[in-house]
Length: 106
Image 1: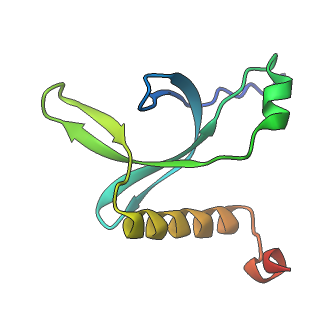
Image 2: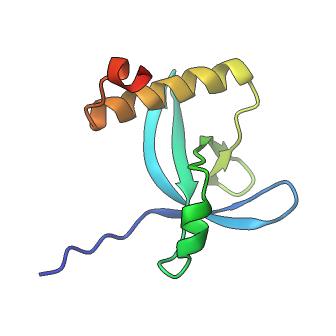
């Protein structure tokens, strides 16, 4: 029996209107809000793009849009908040993969 993996994909649109697919890495509650950590998604036939990828992680906040009645992913404009959320995600990832932060610093 094959183990099939279907990633949670999100199509994001940047400031210039370009669309790009991202895969959900993790989501968490932080200070009463929900945040998503995503990374660019590449199809199997995009091998070179995957090799060239910088390992970018995008962190976005979930906000309810009153006009559409749906949740939206929005950027975090507060740099201090962004840093705190990013640190919380890194701590979770280190714990998930049992990474010792002291070993990682060497």
